Image (cartoon, rainbow, N blue to C red; front, side):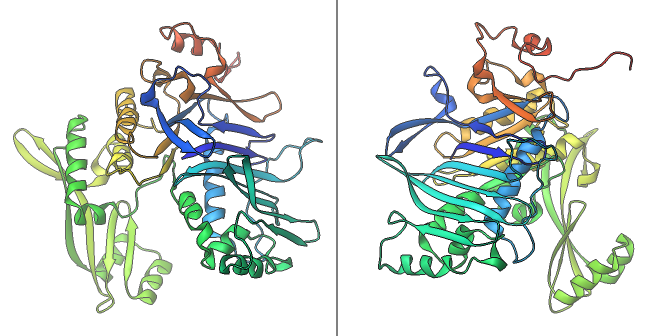
Length: 444
């Protein structure tokens, strides 16, 4: 579970902002919380967190910072390619030109803190701590100076001498020098089979980020192989009044050359397919599977949506469905098949895009119910102010996002405000009591 996240100097985020999944009040209803057992006792952690604010306030920048950090950690970087970080464009005397990403998280009974700082060229700091009965204790720390000289301290809490795990860590720490200053020590440990960091990297891989244009890869393939999932999607779309009564997956073998001409595929894609001889490509929700034995034969696999019109059954392609139905198709997999061992963190930008308030609320409440016995969490952004509903949300779950006078993104928890009752919350928000609303200038 994500417990806390701090980021600074990334896109519209200047000085550090801190997002926490710890409730600030003791009277938060248990349905919103997950109790975890740590070395320092029982902690209660929120399962959901929602960001509200005007356009261009930095909600997407916050989500993008999570994606950048996640990808940088789990995918690594090639030597001498820089870091690819998009630093804050403004300039402050007390703000170094270095981005910071810091996570506190819980996995398999342990609380860890992992952080890193970087500029466009190199990583400067990196650290991994684990919670003990005495507090956060270092496992390793890494500092790289301006000249590219790296010092890594490996602590006994990571691995004691002369264990094989410690020997591997010692060998790898000497490899990060001038040509690899843009690489993470954590990634090198994982990439070389260090058991100590395996579950940590798996936790970061469990951060799934979705933007409004994100589509779920391999959805037809999953439906074709998992009939329970296909039934779940069918029943959900019917229940949510989309007009869809059933979904199915159909496959047709087509001639590759004819297909390429009909779809007007770029020569680069055709050449890539011919070179690889087999694989899968996705175009506009359709999946094309081609095999090694006969590159000219391609299987087209796609989802069909069944509608009943005037007592007749018709099948539609995905591009014929409404934006709302297509958005549901992307979001529904989040709430299917959760189990006690899952520890996914879903970050959804504009969860309300193309959806009625009741559908957005259904998805968020369904997530809360299905995640009850898991360590899954959801973090989302939205514009729909009707979701700021204290009958459906704890005040601790809601955050407001806005830019200050200097153009920096700032966040503040709704729990900072004294709300005596939830009846007039939306009216108060639109009136500007909590900030984080667009300021429309006169004369337009």
